[in-house]
Image (cartoon, rainbow, N blue to C red):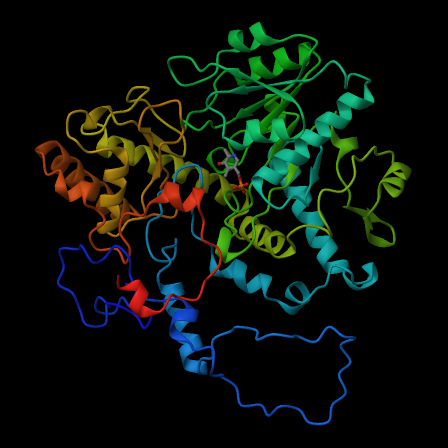
Length: 525
Ligand SMILES: *Cc1c(COP(=O)(O)O)cnc(C)c1O
């Protein structure tokens, strides 16, 4: 199917085995060209008359050329966006096994709470006296986060997990500076099983990153940490549960070693959902840890809403927490907004990490999730998440290979590509074939410590029936790969609106601007 500009509307579908349709649509799966390709620059979708006799008050900034927006009728514009939304695969459409991302159900109750006018319509610049309820909510959320983690303080303002890491490491840096050790403590240890954002965070703060090898069983040996310790080490950034889906069983020994060396222990707790209600990071010797509300506490990811990555801090780091923070006084709740104000309360805040107070809507959703589940419900959610991951492990272990042996995992199960050897099918091919079966693929080629990684995280959202269907699907695919049905994989996805994309080229040469098409006669040559 060619559009008006003579270009295929769905690049990649033309070589499909399926018959062509006149429109390029596949039944109710409609192709969706860009707005610029459906609309026309010379028409307009609105019928306002040009205003007469109005004196321009634009101070010479009036537009000189055409704005270049295509004209569309209201239904055309609406359909464009609704169709785009239908191309989205999300947790609301099916199982989303992306490991390390915790794509879990976002309860609708949370959405209702976030839309209550007192929360939904609040403005960050409103006088504090008019937002007492919102501040109380933040204060209550902070209370539960410190309670659940066994930590002293929490910075609510970071807007994502990676942002929380930056915040926690800035607190560590401030604490080191306060001790006058900024010149010497320049190294941050990062195990090979850490999330990629950990070394990036350390590097961003001008620390030198030193990798810690992972031992045979996928965890960190405290002896390898001790071997690297010295007066030049600022901190370790350890992901727990780590990216292999394993609990770092020697975490206390590692924490003790860090503290004995005068260094800090940053724990990447993005996947706190695997241990919440079971283990408290404060008891494990953690100094700073971010919690992704969009993972553990069910607030939506990405397009569904912004992330939020509060950081809990130990007693040693609490004074260095960023502003703003909420305080409860006899007169109600107040917002401590700058470092001078913070100093009056005995804090040596490193400053501000974001404008305003953080993601208010996410705070409402997260607290709603916590309160509707209660302490026992939150613990049950983490137990179920771990149970579900192990159910998948047990259902696939005879066909697919486990890099660290068939042993219990945490909230996610990691396979490698050893079992695909000599099949001519790669991890990528396998993932693409899952799309044809209606599943979003698992995380692939991450973590880097195992070859051809496939990291599956079902979360607690899935019922046993849905897990059984997922396992049966993966078993069918695995047997097809072993049988030599290579084409089912190497050509996949066959049924997606667009097929194999040149992802490397797309990343290297992103086309971010629509350019008017060349005349059809030239394009046809
Ligand atoms: C998701 C994740 C992060 C990053 O969180 P964002 O909100 O995506 O910035 C960091 N570490 C781990 C282990 C994660 O799973």
